[in-house]
Amino acid sequence: MADLQPIETALEALLKDVNPLDAESIALEAAAGRVLAEAVTAQLDVPPFDNSAMDGYALRAVDAGQWLPVSQRIAAGTPAQALALGSCARIFTGGEIPPGADCVVMQERVEVDGGRALMPADIPAGDNVRRQGRDVKSGAVLLSAGVRLEAAALGHLAGQGITQVNVRRRPRVALLSTGDEIIDPGTPLKPGQLYNSNRPMLKRLLENFGAEVVQLVSVPDNYAQTVALLHQAAEEADVVISTGGVSVGEEDHVKAALEALGQLDMWKLAIRPGKPLALGRLPRKEGSQARFVGLPGNPVSSFVGAWLFLRPLLGAMLVCPALTSLPVVTAKAGFATSTGPREHYMRVTLTFAPSGVTAAAFEDQNSGVLSSCINADALAVIPPNSDIAKNDAIRCLWLAS
Image (cartoon, helix red, strand yellow):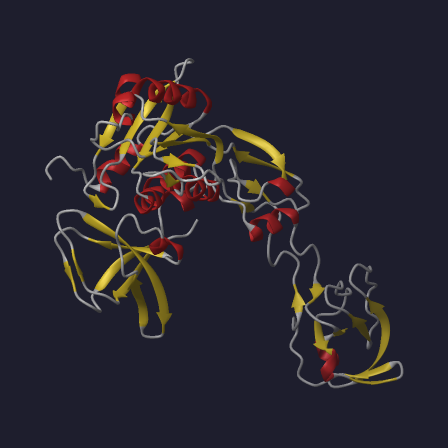
């Protein structure tokens, strides 16, 4: 096992000299999931004026406990007039607090008689008032560079009236499936053939990680064709990913083709699943390089490798800290296991309770059992040469895209 490298060494090689992708300006409505290339500064206070947090009556706190005439009605979107002394205003959620008022009482606490309303006593100033700038102050950093634009962030930008944002260009990825035995669904299986489960699985993961998959290529078990297809993929993609073909079999041509075209940075890792994993670079005509990641052909190995290597690589290209590392959860093992000289990444589900977090492992952890990944929400990291007993504390990587 001396030639097997730890995952830390592999990640260091993978992320060395990664260049951030260029920025582009796109419409906010098309920016879901994209990564901000530059910080955005707020131009407006949010909310832009003091407004009511509920339907009720706006008044001066000193007038609490009295019958007050209702001097105006303020719906959301209606300008408010200065509040007449000794009066209250009927107001609705989001309505502007009228100048002179300093609190709002909810309508359920008010007794109404014609044009008058009886206010309850002891209403504190500021009650049920959403102050101008409570959420955002003009001039403050609204969102930092590197933030991924999900639902709340998109709403935050829209609240400033923003229609265009500068984001990182999505990494272009070529996904190559190797092996004569791997065929696409829809074609009748012949003896010895398997349907390609890696392709749709990895395509979905890559898109969740922020990439644009620009090539889906089947690579035959032929060295010359492997070289040609790798070269073609590198010209179009920022990252070239292959599944299978990186082991030591006579029909595994990817490693040799990579070495002939570019450079091999790392091969064979001390992890389970996923030992035969190749990392390298492929040259382009204009002098730049495409990154190469050769994943094992077993579907679980590809699944685990995508989370451990593809996600941080794409995160580094997008300059997105949230993608470069997975959240860590400490849990109690709901199982017992022993490991050999390789670090084991077990597919587990996490249960949260007042007593703590428990990790339950899928019974069959074989690298060919893709069903172990379907309900997995974390990877339990079991160090090499370890004996884990039930209820031992273990480190889990939360699978958050």
